[in-house]
Image: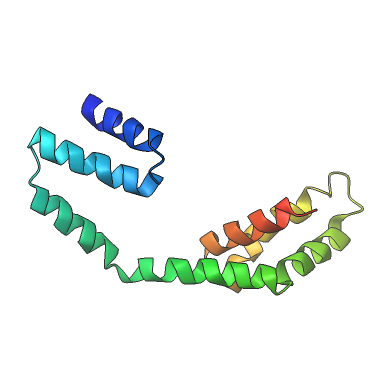
Length: 123
């Protein structure tokens, strides 16, 4: 376990992306530890990447960005603000209400997180 964590920290310190660092420390552990055959690790990795539902995630993120760039998310936030702006604490409500209502529009919670995160960071 110490080897796994040390490899992960070293890979992060040399500015490796987190996804590559996770895979790299797994590879280091498999090579040095010798308990898991490297072919099993590679087959499992590629087997997970060929999953059909994973193919949809980038498209849902794209849908969230298109909603945001097209002006839909600020309009939804403005609508919610007009509905609950007069209620005490109502300024927080328009930012929390899109979370349950946007996945049916965009198709995924990941796209909702992207759209709401970008719209919340803008004034």
